[in-house]
Amino acid sequence: MSQEVIIKEINTKEDYRAFVMFPFALYKNNPNWVPPIIQEEMDTIDPNINPVYHNASARFFLAYKGGAIVGRIAAMVNWIEVKELKKSKVRFGWFDAIDDQNVTKLLIDRVIAFGNEHQLSFIEGPVGFSNLDKAGLLIEGFEEKNTMITLYNEPYYERHFEALGFTIQAKWVEYEIKISDFETSPEKVKRFSSVIMERYQLKLLDFKMRGDILPYVDQMFTLLGKTYNNLQTFVPIQEYQVQHYKDKYLKFINPDFIKCIVDQNERLIAFAITMPSFASALQKINGKINFFNSFHLLKAMWFNNKASFYLIGVHPDFQNKGITAIIFNEMQKLFNKRKITIVETNPELEENAAIQKLWKNYENRQHKKRATFTKKL
Image 1: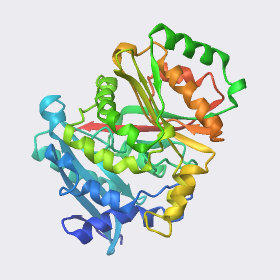
Image 2 (image 1 turned 180 degrees about the vertical axis):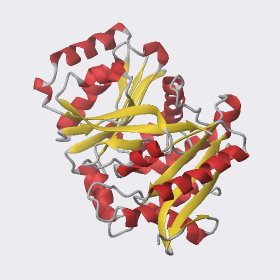
Image 3 (image 1 turned 60 degrees about the vertical axis):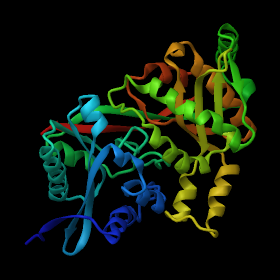
Image 4 (image 1 turned 30 degrees about the horizontal axis):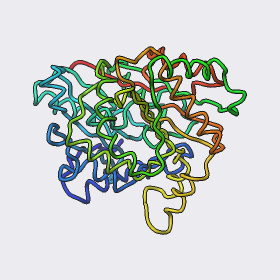
């Protein structure tokens, strides 16, 4: 006789820690799962710390079987999305479970009940509270490590959702790009970059210290909104969220890895944020940052042959005008200087042909694909 699955809504500090720690047990023996930083996960779901709760509601659930935790899920409503964008959606995220269809069903049922409680029309996930949280179920590339800003999951997750009547809402692709030396890099990219810079009287900003970046951070978030506001998944970033993301990510930023482009009026028209890959370092520290293991993060910051694209923003007035070629051309110089030979892109919507066209100028492979899943309530 199979054991009963019990779903518990969590509300104590101990429960929240158990919620965050469950994937550490689930993926303990998986060499491709990259752990998040435990304290950051705790802070993200804590309504006393994360300002997203000014415009969001959430409930968190754990599944138990035989007294052991076998799954988790978050049910969320972003009220800006519902009230201002008129998208009647309940979100689910932080989903992880053993390979038991009933566990997944019972967890999803709690999200559906939360959506029905607020008279919402459909469910979608896995996503976070906003666009800057991790999103997208991995559907290809299970033999690859996730990056610091992407999710990892087992192949059976997709099968579970399909069995529950979910369909794919959106797909993202990720690429691994090989970086050659600058002299042998695509000549047309270098030439095109120079032409575009001159044609639009643009200027590249180089940052030497982390403090040099701060005057431009707010502009970056504004530009991010303008870049992605037409995407089906976009929800405007609120001003009070910006400081939260500054605090969360700025400590990982190396000034060399940020490129900004301004026009003749010093207006920011494009930026790109890359970082050395922290995947292996995060596996070594296993979710905990302290004096003894921070060495691994410092080593990854300064001695690394792999990098990751995290964010690219381009003002709508300059989209489809070759600005991404300028950005990648400048990054190429940096990568060569830092002896970086491999770069991973951030997830790009499958239909984003413009950016994927740029990768075709380089030796590349599409190594991951992810999706969000939806169904009507």
